[in-house]
Amino acid sequence: MKKIAVFVSGGGSNFMAIHHQIKQGKIPGEIVLVISNNPNCGAIQFAEENSIPVLIINETRYPNPHTLNELLTDTCLKAEINLICLAGYMKMLPPAFVKQYENKILNIHPGLLPEFGGKGFFGMRVHEAVINSGKRESGATVHFVDEIYDHGPIILQKKVEVLETDTAESLAARILKLEHELFPEVVKAFCENKIIMENNTPKILAYNEN
Ligand code: GAR
Image (tube, rainbow, N blue to C red; front, side):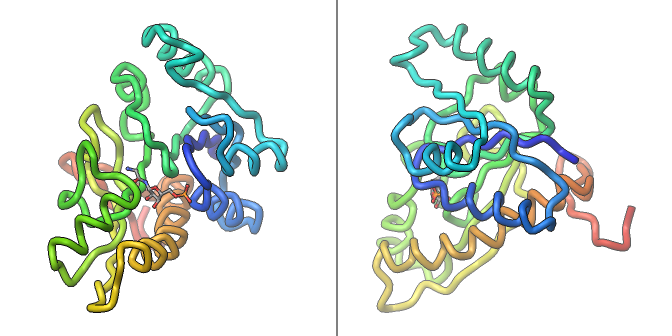
């Protein structure tokens, strides 16, 4: 059973999708910690309603980045965290923390990385940029996190067609639905030890491979 920490900033629908599949027994893991920069978001409310311990970290509470990094690292080590999921977490993690959990931090991005990624590309801004670009395809990506924003090795992507009639909002809604399939699928593969690294590229083993 893997111990999972989920980082959130907003509504938390991806967090809820993972939580749901765990409760259904589909993922051999347990969400033991939810961390957020935003104490008032829907995701934190959901965590509290489900008795999952919560940690709030932000520059207001912890202005010194070293203190923040130490708190994060100590908390995750004490909780014996095996996997970290960034589920709509809108802050950069401290580089030392990312190093400590190399290839153990998953991020979901609402676009087909490496396109429409990097600083400034988050949430609705990704969908607006896709619509403005005239691209006929978008989707969602789950990747391992490294020290560079939206840059780490890609594990799995799912695509959707961008329709003539799409607005950023309609595209966002369609992609969010896809995210709720994609993210739990990757979390499940991680928890089953089915993600291996081959020449720095993650590979999901088929169910008959070991
Ligand atoms: C999701 O679309 C996720 O891909 C995106 O924020 C949304 C969070 O929704 N993440 C990023 O843009 C990260 N750069 P949720 O809170 O309902 O899961």
